Amino acid sequence: MKNLLLFLLIPFISQAQIVNGIVKDKNSKEGISFLTVAIENSDVYALTNENGEFQFNLSDINEKNIIIDNIYFEPFSMKINDGNYINIELTELSYTLEEMVLYNQPIKKVFEDIISNSEKTLKTNVKINAFYREDYFKNGKKYFFSDGIIDFYIKNKTSKIDAVILQSRVIDSNSDQQLNEIDLEYIAGLSPDEMIEMGMKFNFIKKIIKDKNYDFHVTSKKSGDNELHTLYFEPIPTSTERFLFKGKVVFDDSAKLIYEMDVQFDDNFKQFNKEINILILKIKMNDINYKVKFNYNNNKYYLTYLNQYFDCDVITKKGKNTEKVIGKTELIALGIENTSTFPNKDSIFKKKKLYENGNKFSYEFWNDDLIKNYIK
Image 1 (cartoon, rainbow, N blue to C red):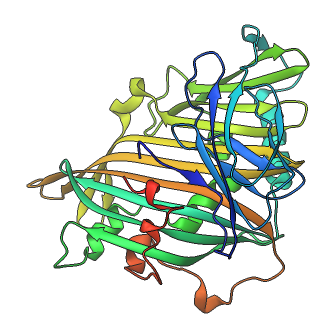
Image 2 (image 1 turned 135 degrees about the vertical axis):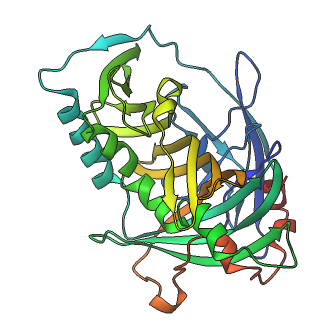
């Protein structure tokens, strides 16, 4: 996805006005990826791609303000008009060196409160429109690829997030036959609704916070009136449990909101990753990486990005055959809107992988000017 273009996806309408732009670091002149560029006083936003590029496609852009409010850069605002190409340069905030933070209560308790507040603050009774992709490899070769446009419905006071597939496409290396049930079982990972549910409910970090096998410490750094905190965690030296992680969580201690999470296996403890028995197979997990980003803009807090990567060996129980499977699932939240209308049960996607929805598209969405740069 070298030239991945992240944009605001909205229904096509006549006389749409388009604004293209790029966001760069003022000093390095390099593009800034996965940065939210928002229309002020609205739910409308776009995300920059890996090169810092973004695009708005709206019915009315003239005289609107775009704003960028990010924890690592000075705030930015400017008025835009139709046809503008916007070259934005942001000044990185000059933070002090990280200093250890001491609390008058256990860090676990402090962070449980931050998780709880973040979960409560995330918007509910909303529809999140997202681009979703699955990319899998077996023994070093492309196994299958699927992508699509999905609406996720998050209803207040419910634990379930519903996914409705708007468009989907499958590219299968074995086009003459579908993946069998065993394949789907061991490469399944998380379904689309489980992916976004894990992010919005902070399930990964909740389990780690409650686990006795981890050490925690918090640091802070300052830039003027801004103060940024980071929770670091790693396994205790004496632990021999399997699937032990290390990582960090970036958060605002005063607002009690989480902005970023980055979790991966701790290399020093991979030796304890015992095999898992699944049906007639054994799974040896070699690596897992999980990243999620949230944004706070226009006084609204929402999820913008999820990425899950895994590497595993699949072994027959007789040990005669081993296959290496690598998978990457990515979810990019393109737009969010309040809603009081929720899907009926027949339209909700209930299967494990987007792959299983097959080729169901009303137009070649991957060739659309607003989408084609996703597919590289």
